Structure formats: C-alpha cells, structure tokens
Length: 295
Image (cartoon, rainbow, N blue to C red; front, side, top):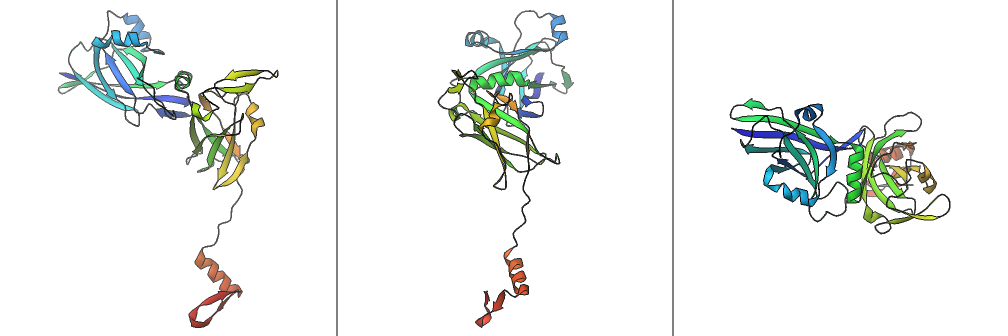
C-alpha cells in the first residue's frame, strides 16, 4: 500500500483577493513522539511560524516526502506505507521568494503549517487524502515583509454609478519622491492586483517626515494612485492623498479600493467609413485615373 496526498496552498492578500504559493515546496514529516489527541481534535492548524535552520536540520531524518507546488498552488505527493494511517503528520512549506519580489533568498525559508491526521480513504492499492490551506492575510503580510515585497489588491469602480471598471490601468506611486512603484490592470470584475519590491524605494530603507516635523526611518512607503483608461488619465491623485491612514506606511498585503470617472471616448471612424462620409459631404472629389482627392 502507498499514500497519496493532494491539495492546494494559497495566501490572502485581502478578504477579496487570494494568490497561490506558486513554486513553493511542501514537506511532510513523520511525527516525533506522542501527540495529544485532544489538541489535534481542537484544530489541525497552529500559528504559522518560521522554523530556525537548526530545527530544520534536526528533523531531516524524519522527512517522509516533499514536492513542488505548481503555478496554481496545487501539489501531489506520495510515499510508501512507512507509518500507521492513524498517525499525525507534520506539514511545512518552503519559500525562497514570493510573487513580486525582486530577488530570491539564499536558501529556502521554512514555515510550519500544520500537524494533523489526514482523513485517508482506501482507493484500490493506496490511501488517498486531501489538504488545503489558506495563509491568513496578516501572516502573509509578515512573510512578504521578510522578502521585501508588497502586494496591493482591490476593486476600481465608477465614482457615480458604482459600476466596476474593466481593463483600466492602476498605478501606485511613492509619495516621498513621486516615483512609480508598480502597475496592474483590472479584470472583467474591476479587480486589480499589483506588486512592487524594496528596490523600488530609495535604497533598502526610506526617509519619511513624522507628523511633528522630525525625520524618522520606515521600510514601507506612503502611496497614492493614478488610473488610466485606454491611456487617458481618469484618476490623478497627488502625494497629499497618501496621508490617508490606509495609505501611510502601506502594509505588505493591502486592500485599496478606488473610484474613478472615465471620460466617454467617441470611437474614431475607420478609414473606409471616413472616406464614405467625406464623399457624401462633398469633401472628396474624383481626380484623374480613378483617384480621389480631399478638399
């Protein structure tokens, strides 16, 4: 008999936006010592936390299986029957980067996800179980901070009608120097997502003016936004908008819902349609050899 564990691991940027842990690795470990069944019954998830390298090395001999996650955060891993199916397993996730990060880390950071007993089902010559986990936004924000990467998501709506605006470009700017941080486009539901990394700031850290007039150090920028519809600006904020509480020292996972008033753009007539209209109005006259000239 063998075991097959399939599943998905994703993370929340905000309540309305999730991203997969693409290209991460999942590791399954055999249990160490007895586990309190009452503790396991109360909840399979512990607080997500990073494991020191010494602890990772210490439990390497208990590694049962590991596999990579695909671009959608899906994984599938199997192993031979080396333990009882009633025993709990330890699940860890390994990252050497996150979406939007400029550079990868030297070596993978490993985080503990869960210790639990899978609900195995017999399927011919193997036991089959599934596992899914969504990293909470506050935990994902802390991990992104370690990687120096920000993710901003939200919805763009018409300021008057509330209608979702599709295929508009959203740009985020650093209020300190008015430099572009990142851009993204809305989908058919008006939702957008954009990324930027620490290298977009002034060095690895940035100076900010504290409200009492003193200077202080912060590793997160104040941001404002601009929106473009087919290249035409429909929202043009300036740096003063970055003083809103949710824009100051923006979190590494942030929801920013925006409003804009797109201008109505009449379609330009095609070449043939414009020629026909010109001919009817008398602005196009026949010339020799079947050519026409416009007056």
